[in-house]
Image (cartoon, rainbow, N blue to C red; front, side, top):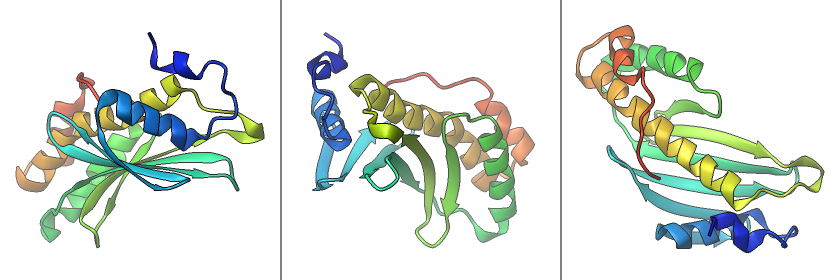
Length: 167
């Protein structure tokens, strides 16, 4: 049975309720922070990712933020920013940014559900999966550029093929 089958006849379901159901189905650790926000951890091959989804009724957007700790040497920040631009050029469904003060690499995406649209469990599952896949794909490149003394161009060669795994 597909994860979305439980929700076929429930159009008014809150998006965070759907996320909570997915987290339970995948056996992810999660915390329903508020009615409109949930935080969870998802294990990847390279890292454990902290993922937060928040619903904004005002602009009808489901926001996803996935983070992992990263504290590159200050002398490699120019290379990291170059690499972030290169990685983002290869991403269609989200973008990376680096939050220096928090020492976090961040993947962000917003799913617009304007006009009262609802998100299906399959859509949200793919949204979370895409965040993990993108992070897994580019994580080795971030490491090589920041600690392996490779140029961003050289580091990107390990991220040419998409990573495969499970979220």
